[in-house]
Length: 287
Image 1 (spheres, one colour):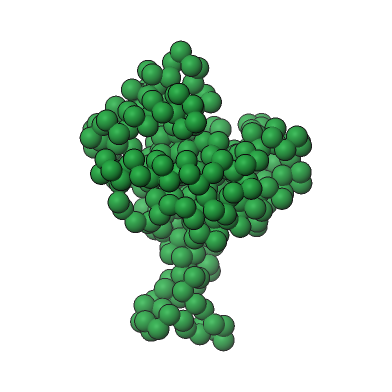
Image 2 (tube, rainbow, N blue to C red):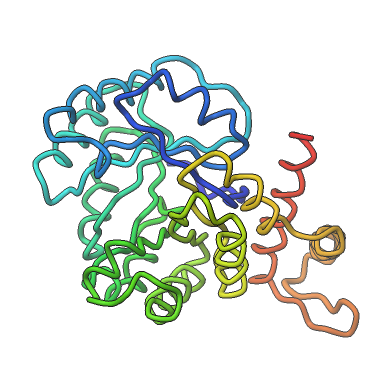
């Protein structure tokens, strides 16, 4: 199993599993993550075809373009999810990562972790927290498997479960709890897409709020949102320079802590510094 690699996760977008002709457009739109959709966006009658299309993508070598590729399977508590997992286990060319929706407990994640391990797949996991049970267990879920690279906050389903408005303030507690869980496990945390395509200013504000709360990135529902999301979650030149300096001094000192500008910097800070540098490297590579 591969280990966690620091990489930018400023933005993500779904592409429907039924439309392989749309995969290249999604992969070239500038987003950090493309997720092939097998769950909510696919009707039951089309699940099998979407699954075949999604897995066929990985039968050929993928470009080293810096775009993280994920497949969102159906819930493992449902027949379609079980069939998705069986298909992933049956292939010799599995997706590099799977997104797990509607997770309620660590057991679901651990079960998939074991199955992937027995098969010899290095597939990573991304977990959506969008249920009351998942929110209650978020801390334990985030730490239950070394395969997990990120938590995703599912605001639409969460608002329905909490019986609250799908808005910033009513969901602030839920968002904060997911951020707390991800930070405790040292993994990324990504916010729900902004649904109003005609309100780019509102989306930018929502992204800035999410960043201030601790999110690593935010989802998009259309490619035209990607540039603004990447801009919000891209560190400044000063932040990048400081991150490179902290990393260099840490690696030179090899002591577990250093003092920079009169402030004690310990190892947990390094993860964020490496993430900043990974974003800077991706930005420079795509410019």
